[in-house]
Length: 304
Length: 308
Ligand SMILES: Nc1nc2c(ncn2[C@@H]2O[C@H](COP(=O)(O)OP(=O)(O)OP(=O)(O)O)[C@@H](O)[C@H]2O)c(=O)[nH]1
Ligand SMILES: Nc1nc2c(ncn2[C@@H]2O[C@H](COP(=O)(O)OP(=O)(O)OP(=O)(O)O)[C@@H](O)[C@H]2O)c(=O)[nH]1
Ligand SMILES: [Mg+2]
Ligand SMILES: [Mg+2]
Image (cartoon, rainbow over all chains, first blue to last red; front, side, top):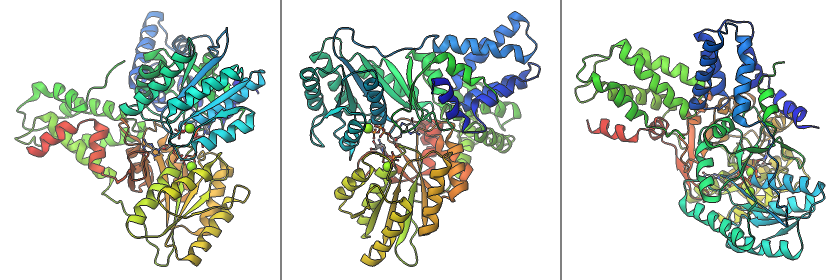
């Protein structure tokens, strides 16, 4: 199933999905204050956030004035245009190392879906014929190593691990050595979930990042920050601080199979310019899709 | 990136020129309510909940005398804070106790909310109160979920009842309660798999567990960082299961936690505990008043008001 159909299927599960509602705001009506209010409401309800919603509305108001638009229907493609502009028009593929092993580091707050995303990503890369090795860098959470091992078995990827409670940087160091000696194409590093306001834990993460940098030139080639689509405005803070500690290169938006709209990525893109690379649409290994900003935005304006 | 200024600062600015007023006029309040609305939305309180709340406060505030010790801005904040605290309910960090043991508690919620960890924390808390909880491993889906619960069980020295991942969660729950009766456990904490509120098959499974073991508490575990969708989630779980309370996790973060207000207002059930960390002793009673000022981002002004 392609991104679009799968994505729509995920969203179709709910009757009052964002797309229907935002779509409905535009149907057969005049542009008045009430219209703007409703549009703002829909954007905020999708977690786009007050700032980004207000800036979008301001742009729309300006266009309405400039182009002397009266009918809301005519405004719909313009908002769509603005959003596409904002989200970027191209899909952003994984940054792969053209000359040797690619190292991907996965970071994020607790429970967002990091380990699961690693399983899915490994599966995808294996399907592309790559040799993948996983490093069990979450040595803290109960059962985290075992969880990654189950994923390793499922998708056929070796897992490099130490004991629970050991130093994550040491595991990752071993992961790099093993990946080198086994001639892996891709090394994916799992890390423990941590809240970005905990300085000691962010320092620990930065240490892992530096080990990768030191062991392989240009590594990590990709640092993916995993965001839960149900997260509200706090995700902005997450993107900012994880970005500072590990130079985040892309976002993965998980749990988009729920009713949350994931509009927070629009705010992040608006304020921070980090591209979304994948979306998670379920708990199975092929529930990972490349993020296509144009289709994402188009889907926002689909009405049934 | 726009940095959020506390509501208090913004309100102070709005009201700078209104010092020494006798009563709050409709216009003053209207202006203040714009800021309050923004603050609540920035804190992820659900849009509809915000609407209702602001309306209620507006009605109450207009015509009120401004206390001598306060500026009109502080006066509005005081009213907002009072209303918010009231809406959030009193402190209720108690867990039900069945007249005939064991007391059965079901933990439910979305994926990754913190159910399993909180199950471990509750066991820890109960043990400190000289209770004997049994943990039931009813998540047969997530990789290594049983192992996770077993590790936590070991850490708090509490027995974990598991039948592997090939038996239905309904049967595991039933057997766990039987086991508890036979062996003198006075609590059974049922850890269930994370699920979407719109996943009919999995929501059905929870209903069946509920029917089978007749729990004394069904606690919805919610991530404090949840955005606007918190109401849909809470409403659905509540409609389908009749939850008895919620536990808000990851409040050790810097989220403003507006989800707390949304959930409280759509379910009417109390927030019973707050998860304040990953460690097993990081479970605290929930304080509605503190949560109110956290959502508003204005601990500072509150202390000012208290002194006044
Ligand atoms: N519905 C849905 N569930 C998901 C998705 N991705 C992950 N999950 C579930 O979310 C829960 C948490 O996933 P994990 O992969 O353990 O999350 P994590 O970020 O590694 O968690 P920590 O390591 O504890 O911080 C699990 O129950 C996953 O099955 C998704 O795209 N959709
Ligand atoms: N910082 C912090 N982390 C927490 C808290 N509660 C849980 N966590 C973390 O959140 C992540 C998810 O917790 P789990 O207990 O596995 O969540 P769950 O709801 O059982 O997840 P599923 O079974 O996959 O649905 C883990 O990394 C926990 O350590 C809390 O109060 N604060
Ligand atoms: Mg993990
Ligand atoms: Mg669990």
